[in-house]
Length: 201
Image (cartoon, rainbow, N blue to C red; front, side):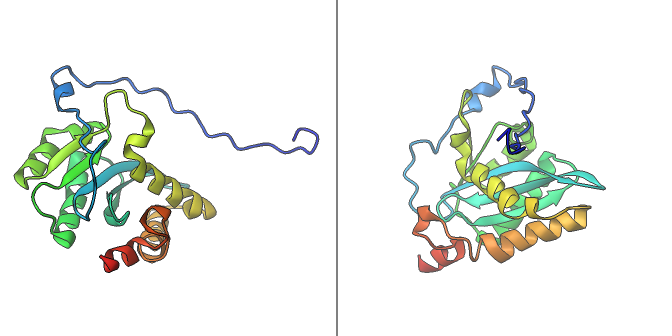
């Protein structure tokens, strides 16, 4: 590589986060889906927040919810800040669209927004159950979300320039609504798209 003048692109290392989870909170940190037999849609949704960088308007935050069984993105939104109220707003959209039954498990990492009293209160109000990656987890405990974010960026966003919020929103919309949900196949659901898979159920 040195002879040919080729350099690899190395991912930036993020600083290690200092845990601010209190001993009392740790009692709520339970991974309910680790050994769960997931057999139908609206049984488990996963969620997470990822950073979307633009050239002129800085960083925005994509919040998404995915049905673990079908891999379909059931709700998403792009914001200029990340608080529990934004997560609840997007979750409301998913509930209105999917109308899940009580007992739905919503699995996430341990971000402060997802441990907030407001978020937990909203889930309890709808008889949903919160689940978290373990205290000393590896990234595979929220693999559906990690995979979706990686695909979104590698297959789509990194292929174009995002100058502002409008660019970012448009490209994310085109990827999710025009490609990922209706067209992109997944080996875990029989090499069909999430939309096709749900139609077959």
